[in-house]
Length: 158
Image (cartoon, helix red, strand yellow):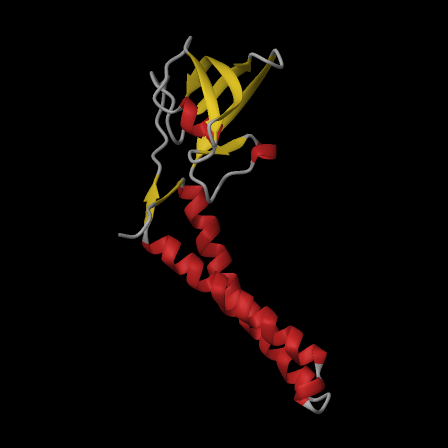
């Protein structure tokens, strides 16, 4: 069974835009690079040609990956009001007990995760630990049996 990728509507649009860009502009650019590199002569000793072919292979692999993801996408619905339990698509404000600092993260699917932008994956240790818990609860995030942090949930919002 194929893995389901949880994304917001915005995240799905970004994936679709990337796919379209790779299929149109990306393929055209690579074809031009290969054409130019062929003009340099003997392909057996042509590093420009090898590099362009490798770039083409990476791009085609990404296209296949994006197509597979989009076939198995689950859109996360954004609601209104306050949620009772932390879940994908919600923002969670927590206090890191060890650092004595507050953080607000939006829990998103793995394809949209960007910790620097305040988006953590539902598959990362902290995201996994927060899901299903309520305001006031303290959760411990673990990775490979090792504690990576203890967090008290201060607020949950949609």
